[in-house]
Image (tube, rainbow, N blue to C red; front, top):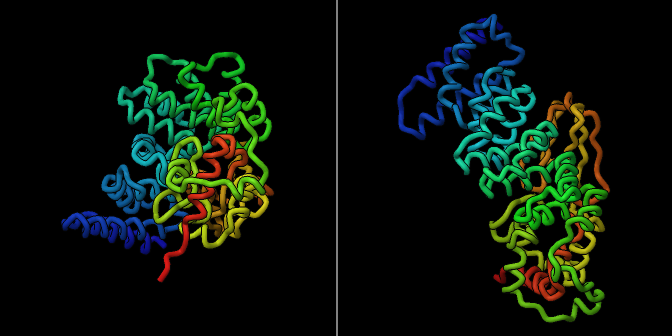
Length: 374
């Protein structure tokens, strides 16, 4: 094992030291990372050559997914700065979320607090977003105070609302602020939008009372199914409803390559389902969950809970894709319990974000998405 480790280290060092064009250099770096991560159960204190090789490759990969891969594989410490850099650069991606989870797992919370003090508004907002997407309750006390901090930009505070709503503790904290009238007026709309679509039934029900959605969106009940099917819709306007933030269909579904691949693709949905089925799939999303898109409830030993679609699973870990399309990998040793949920990952109550006519327009648009004729 000693000679194998030294051999791998030498290969890695040679690869990263080779001067070449950017694309060729990146390929060599990827190969070096692959070679190093094949090593298992290595005590780096006893393998100085391997440790030196890792340090050299870390320098070359700083700020990239490969950096996170190395830190995670070798359980490296004192890499917070580099991990936060990845998280800020990629708050929506698997690498950025994994980087943030590694920082939170290291308990280096002071470093996160210092990073949140940045005067760079875009970086602060992305850091908050990464903290939310990590879905770790440790993030809640770190970012919750930003809500009332009027010295912070509205962009950062809006990002904080979204981030808090990602975790149950955070959503409860946000709801408590609303109940105590501590939620700033310019954040109430986004808080209402977020809390009225969370998956925790009690919080969602309470939010509907404390922070109801804007009047007019749900002021009139939808007509019965028989009437909805016969109502005339405008597909062009329905496309706008599909893409707008409050409805957020495009955040989970793709149409002709546009949107996120969380739920089933809808490019040809009008060919597959009649209008009645399209209506029912929105009003009762849990009634017919597509195979492969079942929701999974994962309870971690840390006390946090995770909900999403199972993207992949190995004997060692499971990958969960959340409603934002972010895949996060959890070691089986971290998991206390995992079970398939009875409800769809698609939230209920989407019709509450639309007028009756907008709902019909959306159905008309979905019905128009058909397979191209040869």
